[in-house]
Length: 98
Image (cartoon, rainbow, N blue to C red; front, side, top):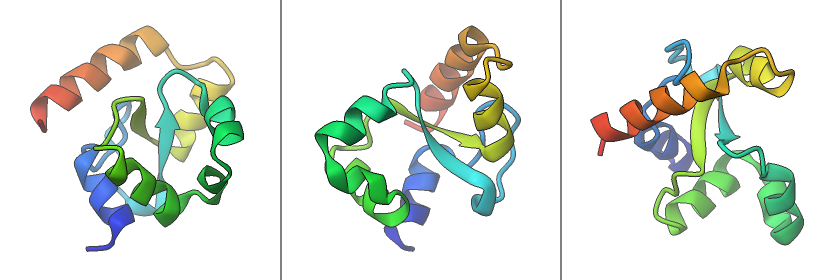
């Protein structure tokens, strides 16, 4: 298992909103929408994918990241996803796989 697959597994293996589990459409989402600020601090975070997953592993799988599929990630970005409900789902998911 490569580090990106490991990260997807650690973060629940599916979109926390809709349950999609196809790894090809899953993405790491910054829970607090601060990804841009984090990327400014660490240039290698821009690489995404395996390099970003390795960073998450080094940090001990921080809880500021969640898995969303591309569709749910887009809906969150444009404000069409209930973030409060998403936070509840994220907490339930984290509790189930810890």
